[in-house]
Length: 490
Image (tube, rainbow, N blue to C red; front, side, top):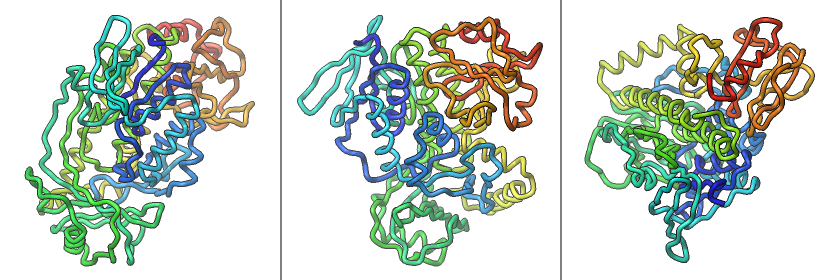
């Protein structure tokens, strides 16, 4: 079984989504999670548009949309000028407020429904890598044991045992700022989207689906490398009142916490038969609520590549592209998280003026709003093309294109276990024979976006990114180009 078996250390949202992707790719998978139950304290709160697209591409979005609270705007560095998501080219032009505990429960249900094995109370303690497999050491309810797998993936958080045992470095910068948060009931809740930043500190109030609010912020005393002790409700009340002049009638906290701005990025996302995803690969200040989303998107990039490798239809070197594509995303995450930390946790007159200037830019320049919104939501992620002469769409994420001849849009057509060749001329694709790892749809674009108007054929990866796009000749997909992608030559 080891040759087609993957072990995932960590059963949070990242590990669970990866498990589901592997099952859709026809691979056996076991998730080993140290916690015996889902943690009721939700570190993450927000599902971003690209993550909702990822869910939609597998038909899994329904329960999340039914339970989450749509918020049509976001923030960058807690600036007063909010980012407007309404113009984004996505079916989901909003963030979805949904506590991580519920997100995790829904993802676990999804993974189990696809046949993944999830073992709680089982902690990965180390591994031994061989030429063709990995022997994973585990401590479970009945003691220590070993299990064998073709690959081991560490989705086990910032203190990742898998990363440490693999000898993968985790360089970066230490924590110098401690933010704070409280999930509380408010008798006098502020208006939706409330945020305030003054010389005394910054506070945001985020409504939760169960009637509570999350109050999150920082103040001049947050700049410290000394742990001040656990946050109390009285301290939270003092901090919030100092900034806003009101405690909003806060009461009955379900979670009070502090969090730091330590920022680190794994030196490698893959070493042999060991891979990393999510917080095991990147740590940062939780500005904008992007961390869990980037982790799920790591898993979405990795899942089909790992399954294709194990199932034998992967292009040459496909698994190596996981680090090449996702490590730069992690580096960008670190950079914009640091930038936001400086804006939201610094209370000098100079930063106040900088905040005002950036707010004016966002309000006056729609391009600035769109640039920051696409960066935060990951809709702007573009993977590098191997061929410098490739069509500009290569590497971009394909939008949910409407196609003639079907009532389904692109997200419903994308295959988790194959590339999707779109013949947009309705003329067939001669010279591209059927094979494992390739599906074909013939039709035309009903309402082509500007960037797609000259495209006559496109090859869409299982993760929804464009592998190749063509415009020339009679409009049919050149067989040599498609064969080159499937063979890993372009």
